[in-house]
Length: 272
Image (cartoon, rainbow, N blue to C red; front, side):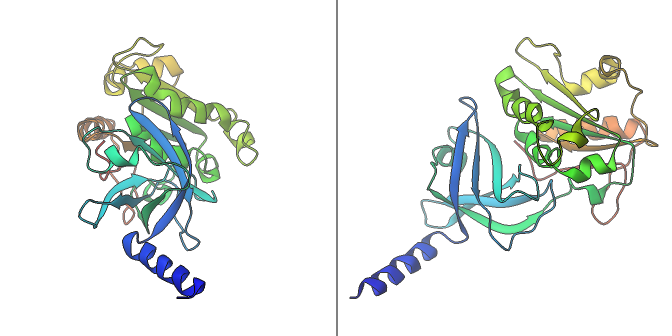
């Protein structure tokens, strides 16, 4: 058997066992519960900031084990970034958390999702509401020039149990004004409102509670949410999404979709 034939066979075996493979380029562990990683981007992949794709690994049965993950990098990035929780007994994350640069993952290049600018009517102020790793799609949108072109003010709220849960988002936001592409656009427009529910921090409590009692508006020195001016995107646990939907609709906002843009949208695929 020639060396070329052996190489071709090895390549064929690799493709057969790991379809739609992309190579891990970077892994960063933020805490014992959270990590982020970057992978190569398929040349053919086009996506809108805020969308998600299916990624995963091969299961013990040799079949792909896939889950929906929001792309945390903006649409212009040459690589793809993801932000994930670690679940000790999770079918996928129990293994995914151990990946290293050079490893491969499965990535199905068919992006979808509702957390996109096209699903919202024009407005003056946009709110990004996230809990936990629900920050991921907003990590993409916060680095997209269109966000700052479309709105006069951008407010990102992020609620986690502890300060460690906020660190990924805090560091990302801290670097935005230094970004050569959007730094000047971000200045004076972006407001960051992190909250914790279990560990002491400057802002404590669930964002829903702080909205209901007006604390958020007083802290930021702004008017309450109005359907005439405000737009919103929501990504968090199922209970969080439900509570925010009820609250936003109490302000008069209506839920939109790609096919019918309105005042707010919710990412239903995220359940972490």
